[in-house]
Amino acid sequence: MKLLLIGVFSVFIFGRANAQQPVDYTALIKATQSQQGVAGELKLAWWIPVEFWEQALLQQGVTGFEIQSFLDVLEPYVFVGMIDGAIGDYGTVSYMDEKIMSATLRVTGTSGEQRTPLDPEEIPEELDYMLSLLKPMLQGMMGEMGANFHFYVFSDEMTDGTRFCDPFATGSVKIETSRSNHSIRTPLGPLLPPKVCPEDEEEFMGDYNFCPYCGHALEDK
Ligand SMILES: [Zn+2]
Picture 1 (cartoon, rainbow, N blue to C red):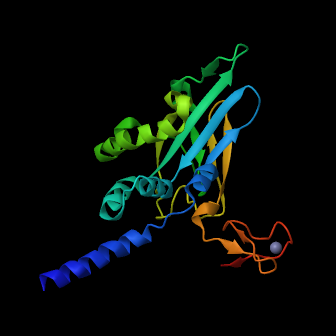
Picture 2 (tube, rainbow, N blue to C red; picture 1 turned 90 degrees about the vertical axis):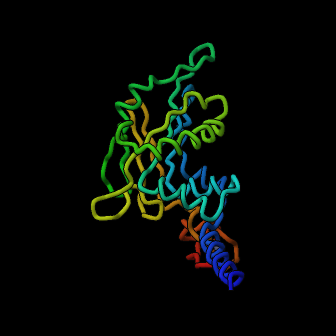
């Protein structure tokens, strides 16, 4: 009887783990970042929805109950990372003062509402602790710019129960400061199931509606 119960229980656990489907991680990173390619500038904004954390944790080998305990804490929030530098005449980079960045940062979500980052005292202790584990991972991904990668927390909850920045909504997430202006298109293609062209059977990311080669309307795979 005991064995049978364990069997049922592990089916339940694996059932949950399977709900955490891996997607194309590199494509997801690309789809959530906006880089401004003007010469002499080093500007990057990274919108980090809870769906990104899920994929990042899967990449780290975290699964099942453990991943869910992270996601439960992260879910009510949306995160934004920013780098804003200007390359000087001698190749040295001067970065925007963090105080100016945090004071002027505004995010307009897919909901259409504009929000400012939460104050440190509005961030619950368990989230703060979790971010102390996750932030170094993100800074590491930024390479030598990592030290100038600043990170902000916003509430992802709207009063009507919808999300402030919904990666599945059609629209955009706009991230602005006094000297940068980023826009990230939604829905995030890598999170959607792929689509296929009925004509040439080529597969495309889920945010495509028409085949870029023959113009046919794409169908669900
Ligand atoms: Zn086609």
